[in-house]
Length: 338
Ligand code: PEP
Ligand code: MN
Image (cartoon, rainbow, N blue to C red):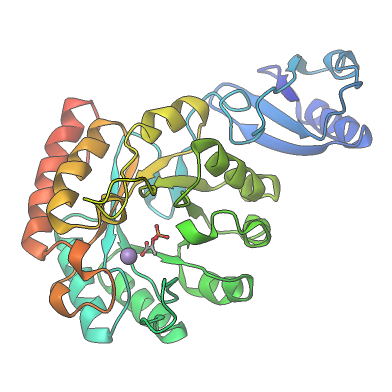
């Protein structure tokens, strides 16, 4: 149920509405928009008479949410969610670029790549310290050492950082270093991880699973939101189809579809979506044209020797070209890339 409050609602009216809703047995989520405050009351029973809430002082309107995702949906929150992470905003007019290697491999590697992507105009450094690998024999990441190196490389290059959290046990450790948690495609439906990330206090980028529908993705976001963490963005990173010319099939239309159904920012990852260096630039251009709020791009100065995902990593010069071209595309649709 959505409870829309009057524009001039007083603090005491607001407190009263919240405590009455809790008294009726609902869990209450508050969203403060530019115009008015909206409360999401989760746990409405079909027989509950919503007039009990309509008559409370300070309440302008009450309606039931019919979509399965209550907090992630547009009916709960009409305005776009803008994540404010230090001095970076995701979901506003600026399209943010996150870039870096697939994995943190060494001090020299992460510092070099951080400098390259920062000089090219990136705001956020990406890189994995805990890697979800298809094979147990592949490089699994440097662990805490990787987090430490990445934090230093980000700070020294005036970047924020995003890194993947693979397991519940790692949440406190990763939270100590990162600005944004990444939940990877393989963990999109790890509901116990999602619940615990929902209790954490840092923003989360949730990647779409390899075989997940858009509704599945939104339902997974719901697990994070309902546990209290409202700083969530969704990432389209390609899905498995019968096509074999690319590593995955980039579902470009997921971008406008999610924007219509949800207020959460949408990130596009053409690196994992295509799996091939020469496909990343055209699909990054397409993603910006389709309205993504951020791009995630893998970059490596020596992809031949990369310990993971070398074939899809852009070389530094290619990345500079990408930045130039996506800037131009952003302008066409009235957005910007700084
Ligand atoms: C990654 O970002 O390096 C990664 C492992 O992504 P995904 O979970 O989308 O495969
Ligand atoms: Mn990767």
